[in-house]
Image (cartoon, rainbow, N blue to C red):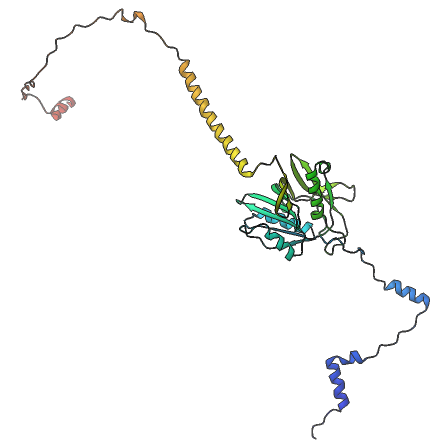
Amino acid sequence: MGCWELPVERKMAAYRRKRGLNAELAKPSKKAKLGPSEENVAAEEYKVPAPVSEGKWKNKERVLIFSSRGINFRTRHLMQDLRKLMPHSKADTKMDRKDKLFVINEVCEMKNCNKCIYFEAKKKQDLYMWVANSPGGPSAKFLVQNLHTLAELKMTGNCLKGSRPLLSFDPAFDRDPYLTLLKELFIQIFGTPRYHPKSQPFVDHVFTFSVADKRIWFRNYQIIEEDASLVEIGPRFVLNLIKIFQGSFGGPTLYENPHYQSPNMHRRMIRLATAAKVKERQQVKELQKLKMLDNKETISKDPTEDVFHIPAEKKPEIIETEAPVPKPRIKRKDKQFKRQRMAKKRV
């Protein structure tokens, strides 16, 4: 038998199945009509629950957290901890130390951020933190001291990732004008915006800012539901204010801390104190030597010392101009050798 071909209609049907055209041409099937009671039951059964946060994300605060080159591992871990605790934050690559600080405003604009936390490392041992409102300002520069990260503390507290924190401020923030400015800056930066897409609709930890010893102390605590007690989570650090500027990373100085002492000056004072201690010890040793010499009793000459002293007669001084005559050496014939004498003793 010769080869046979499929009809044209069957060919078109196979082509439609292959290309998925049957689904488009298929007519919707008719649904059975339900009564009023059956419709309510079906609606309740297949009802999708509404989202937890039905509000609108209005506060579009975004914080850029990054650092300069030359930071140590502790600063890097601190940045990672802050990014975990602040879901509205963004990261960027490290900035070269040769670049000027006003370049950060352009980086914030490219990242679509209006707040910035910038960590600046100097001499591989000093850490400075810039907190700024970009690009209009103001900005504040701090010296970071007593830094401890989340992994280092090993605290028992824990919080949900992305949850919104409560901000607790010391009453001293309402007394001084410069602290009031810093309080508003901290609220805008550390406060997670409501209904943020990456945030969770829960409040289970507290950021505390307290003023002590002319410094700002930062702590993070967990709120325990049972008795509303607080357990520290971390990280923790101390901010020593240096200056507050009107602009972003520069501009006229609004406030300068009179109690601030630079780390270089602090290390110099420690070296001078150590050198003064060494010098004081040397002076004490010299004084002790002088006292020992002064306390020695000086005994005067004994008058009875020369009582039994008999002066000797003076001999005439003879000056010999010639060498003395050598004495003749006489060899004794009766003198025995040593071995003969020893042999005689043995006998």
